[in-house]
Length: 163
Image (cartoon, rainbow, N blue to C red; front, side, top):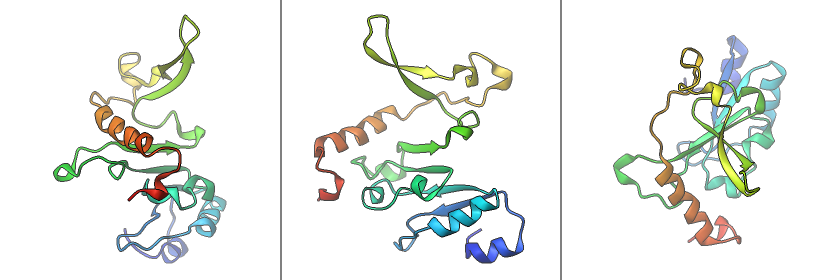
């Protein structure tokens, strides 16, 4: 439903709210006060965010959002007739066991080198099929690599200087 959030909240029981940080016509929303009110009512808050805009805007997590997600297409991935595109998805720790997808953690290998590994594998279908919440068999790693290298290529000065 697309509506004025306050109007909806005053008249309905709500368990979760999805907000969009940058609106469809380009307006930028600061949801700090609204998120604070929602959290006081124990409502889960998800925010769809623009990864490029987050370079300049306050991160939704700092505003109190529980879940933040969006497309990484703006970081150098061609439009490709609408997809596929990599995305980002972040949630507070209390939701990590409910999140779909694979969670990759940083660890040490047998030689003591930094290594990446699949964390929380009990969520995966190859461990506990009947209780799995991650049944994802494909990946957008190539597109995630393109987006990452786009950021690396532009260097530590930051995306706010992108032209």
